[in-house]
Length: 237
Ligand SMILES: N[C@@H](CCC(=O)N[C@@H](CS)C(=O)NCC(=O)O)C(=O)O
Image 1: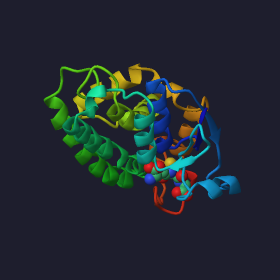
Image 2 (image 1 turned 90 degrees about the vertical axis):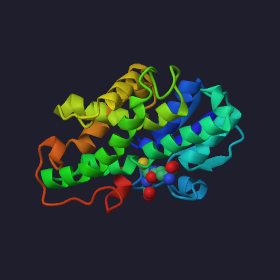
Image 3 (image 1 turned 90 degrees about the horizontal axis):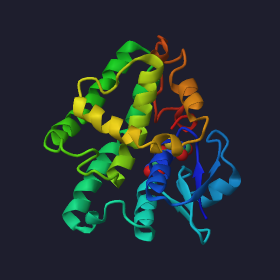
Image 4 (image 1 turned 180 degrees about the horizontal axis):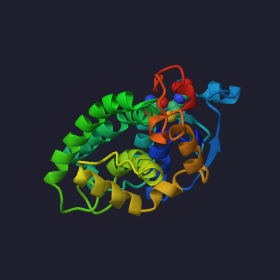
């Protein structure tokens, strides 16, 4: 069986587990600590990062883009029409727009105070505005340009899941002002794949990490923070 090496709150992992859930591909999962990476993991992960996918033949694959490509080649496509090169290229472009927001969203949620939060929000909103414009021409479908879930929906799933949890626990609407993005997010969340693609303690770990009193979203007002990519990088996403 396929195995995913994971870290509980990693969005790159959730993109892959979400994809496998949507495709109905069975897998097992092993969680590691990123603060104290086991040697066996360092031996198989050239980038030292999760996700790692162990294939049926026990070959370690790294980098979520490469893993998603492998899953598409080995298992049925969610949307067979992506075999057409134009469709495939367009979907990939929007997948990229989503995945490049993962670390930005982590930093945004981790902001220590209101100023930092609002500063980082500007970047997020610029990205959301582009999606909103695109969605205006594609309002007839439940998901992104289709009524069946696709890779694009799974690439945005981690962003949607975290946004929903922030709203649930703090009342803050990270997609405020972007109604079509919110509808898309709600539809993807209604598929139930978000919950299936994470550990049962995901919500608990997520809130402890992002919504604690050290963070603006948790009611904090710290002088500064490092954000993702800073010194705390390996302990968050
Ligand atoms: N480009 C990688 C990024 C994966 C990534 O950033 N994973 C984080 C966890 S969310 C990680 O393993 N961080 C540990 C580290 O960088 O040392 C991918 O797409 O798979």
